[in-house]
Picture 1 (cartoon, rainbow, N blue to C red):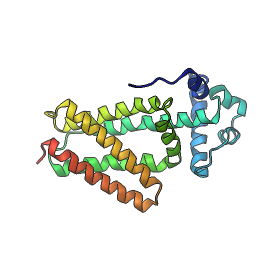
Picture 2 (cartoon, rainbow, N blue to C red):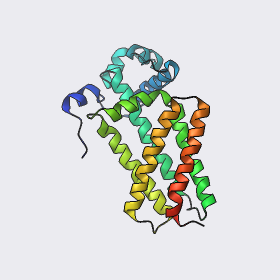
Picture 3 (cartoon, one colour):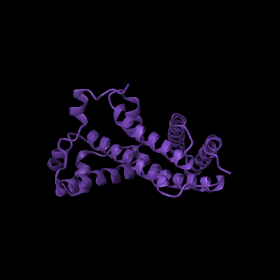
Picture 4 (cartoon, rainbow, N blue to C red):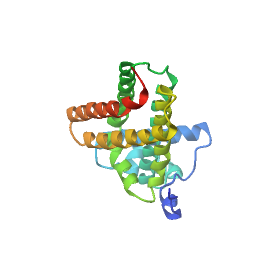
Length: 217
């Protein structure tokens, strides 16, 4: 069962106010973009609120109007990263379903190219993602996106094979998501060549796992 964030954690980490106007949304985007650039430049070092404000061209007071602390900014960056995956997976459902294993392999390759880019460009956010996963009060944030991703993987498999039972498609979606994420985290802690090799290994595992269920020639 999912746990809700407790009140203390929500107060400490939730944005102070949600942007309701276009101008406010642009300010939040400037803050998040600045924070992301700094995390990429500084690696494992967490940027300070002052540094984020300076990079965004804002005062520290302006930052605090929207976020109570730098941790809340990083958490919102993690949310933005997590929310990018459903759109990438949904693209595979919008195209005509593959009719052969080779066509399906090419679709998997396109998905891996898109999702790998998300990991590689946001590698410095992975400690935040791992912290969310390991914190019982924060885990519901990731669960929300995990459920979307699993449902989309299942929908994609049923798009390829409409006869595939929903429970089986969902089970396969869980394996696809969990194995893919865990292996990429390992790869990101190595060099780029190792990351690419692990990607190839995961792709091979996916194809071996899914092919028997897809009824492709």
